[in-house]
Length: 274
Image (cartoon, rainbow, N blue to C red; front, side):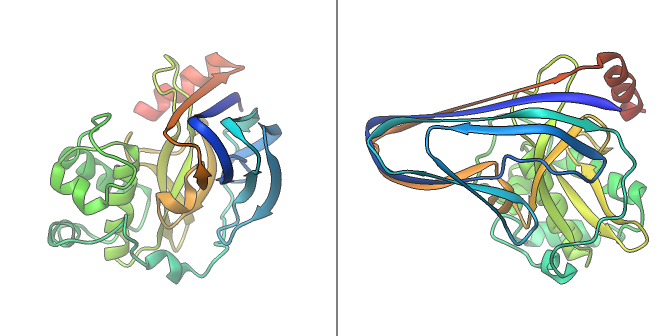
């Protein structure tokens, strides 16, 4: 088993006093899908309230109602990964995950793409779809924004992990396969990915939810830690919210994922590439 330590810092700074702010945090991993949480904390300069959303995610609401000019959120802890995946049923009816959203919209190009595919029946079929997506939409950091839709990313021909997940989900739904967005973290040996990661789950009747890292064309292994799921990025993004006042906003996010057993991490990384 792998032991991963994670520290995720989100720092907002405002040019004027912040009168009021509500932030929704999806920054708490849960047991299941091959992972076990050893300990986890969230530190923030505001009032924190915990609840669970319709997708089963652990949510925290942060309320700031005084004249702050910065908001700092630190989520950190330790997670063990690499456990066997048990079949996981959905918190919601599977039909919900066949519904297209604005970010997983369809277009003539997406429909034609889906028509060139066969409905996936196993992991290998899902990985084949991932490879087709990467061929048409190579990874290019900074090429899209958080509001870029699946059809826009496909038309542009470049994107990041969020776009790859949205295209994959849209194609699955066009093929009548329930699919959902997953936010989380990915450990890399060289530390090149110092930010949140995204992938997708697809429902295969004989297997249940199957997790696929579309950007890396791989099955989820012990290098991944999941935070939240939803119909698209908006349902599963780590931090979202609204504010009153504050003037101009600057936001910096930094993620550190380290392994307490790097030798095992190297073996898993090698097996992922095979």
